[in-house]
Length: 289
Image 1 (spheres, helix red, strand yellow):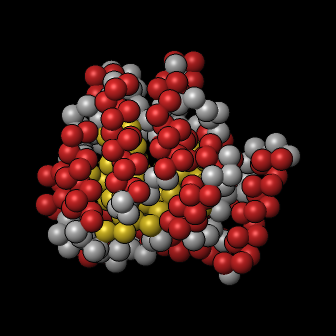
Image 2 (image 1 turned 30 degrees about the vertical axis):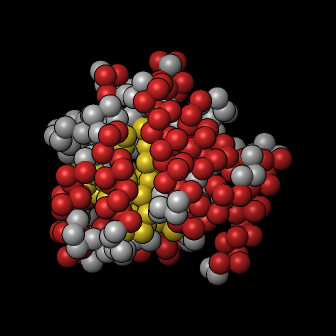
Image 3 (image 1 turned 60 degrees about the horizontal axis):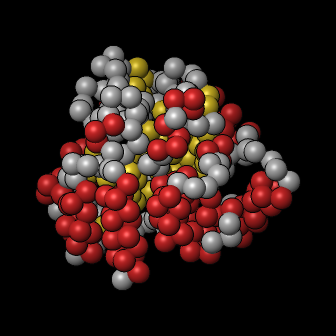
């Protein structure tokens, strides 16, 4: 499908969502593996050591469902994706299937430690996010090419943000960087920034963004994250987990009050899109199309 057709669909999706109240996803996150013994405490999904690998047929069913709901942007997620196989199918076949079904763009995320092996596999994906927790992780990325960085800012690493941004600016192989803030899931409240720290970091990011640093977050979206005083439209993205659960939100228990402390910057970006913020719209189109 050509870019004009894709833009036409996006405009039609937006019109129905913004003016007709239609709540259908535009983006899908499909988890194809589970089980993780790492210490990334900002993750609320892969927190059990028992691994499960979806079959190619199960993933096909997931993608059919997402596409039927109207989704056209696909994120394939899960730990140990480097080792995912189903019969003769490899991870490349998953992304190829997404293109064949008509998804406009695909993306995935891997830890910095896996980048070298991922590069050897030659996986074809539109947007590769390489996750880092600390500036020291950038030492693993000297050969980074045509990829973007992803960092969850928390109370332990927020002072490293300027160093990470300088690495980005001086590394031509990095396209952009996207920032989230630690969402205090159960047992991780100490990792969340307090209000003043969060405010300081967001203002810092806006300053860097305006200087031309390749930050994926838009200024309008970052401003939303300053106060979290906006309507959450989590339904724009749907989630399918390894156990088959389908959800319109990243957590099942909204009653826990966690949404009022949301650190997922996409929530601010989504709200900015619905407010016709041009910088946010262009940022989204730039990374997705």
